[in-house]
Image (cartoon, rainbow, N blue to C red; front, side, top):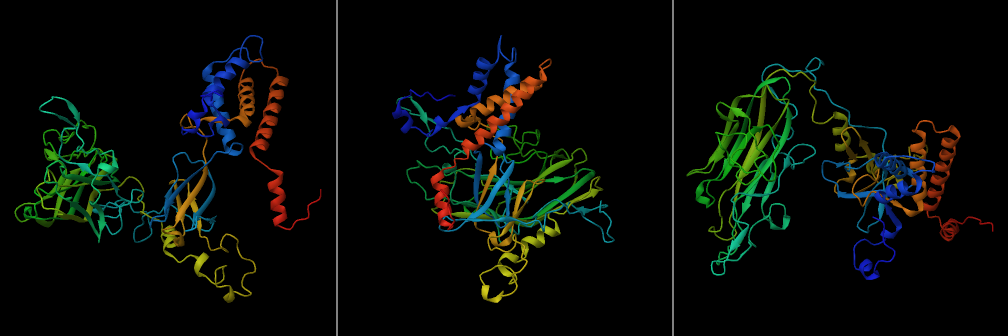
Length: 530
């Protein structure tokens, strides 16, 4: 929407849209083009709003790549996996760097000496392995929970789901007025979730630690049971049936946490933060989801007139043993999900203060019967595994430019610039949508600056006023060049005008200031002729 120049200044300074007068929305650009450039007696006698909208969006994309100041950025603390997911609207990067404790950015450079190729599983004579009977499913990653759950590499975990359903409203028995229950937890609000619970890989085991907060004697703060889940997709194309097993350990009910439960199963859909962990054997498609979210998993696949899962429950003595479930028919699926749910039901308010319970699952195995139709892949390529596990040359090889300058005298001639620096290196795997970093960047604050195509929200689809004319010329040329019976000299004219307007917009948006350039050159001791 075009900004009203006559708006009250108080609204602007107290609002959140500071600096928005620089821009015009794409919607207004389209409407203005239809009014000014289309009609009887004009170059374009007739054009639909759909056509103009299409060409306007294409023009916005093209101008975003090298004319507009449309650089976006993301910052993360690099996890031990040394990988960063490309943003959802990523087109290309402009800069990759990490920032130090002073907030200073250190530019990183791409390496062309390595990559993360697709790694094919081979048999002992070097042939491609499609496997025979009873083979471990190759794309089940981190089944022994030796590393922290990682949604990119292995297990996707859900936030806490409150197990017991309490009313979101309360009614005053005296006045009869209905108000919001302040103690009703909201799973979509992180502030309402338990802050001390743990659900992750701990000491080589998937561990759920449910922590009972300090009890409120007045009963105003109800402590809910919780449900956690994690899941991982596996390929079963060509597989007839599979066997699942795991070692579960749940404590006895004497801990005060009754009916502590672990479930391990094969689901046709992934888990979800709104999953109800109850199971209805008569209707496995919904699994007893009674809270209005029947479309969400775990949708454990049918198995012997019930559904495919095994469970460990806390009883009089608890359970700590390996269990398995065999002959799960997956022949009708191409992919399924190995899904784990761990929960404590009910109201925990009666437990003593600061009580907690641990229950764990370890050493999951998924064994398949049959033969894959497709090539089977290793979780990681050997190339990437070696690159991330090695001590990088940027920081540890004396032949390169490190802090040990006194040890490399005479060894710096002919250095490759991408390695002769101490800031680390990266490469982008566009096929998998990941940025891979060298090992010396682990734990650092990494910044990715990138280009998008500006097609997103209404706030993103806007044009700087210094480039508004360029967008009009782009639309004009695009419509004329795709319209029949338009003279060629007219098309050429607007092609030239488009080029000139784009060049002018690029110069305007470059924001070159003579004083700044002069000062930079003075700092470099350059002779300036006036």
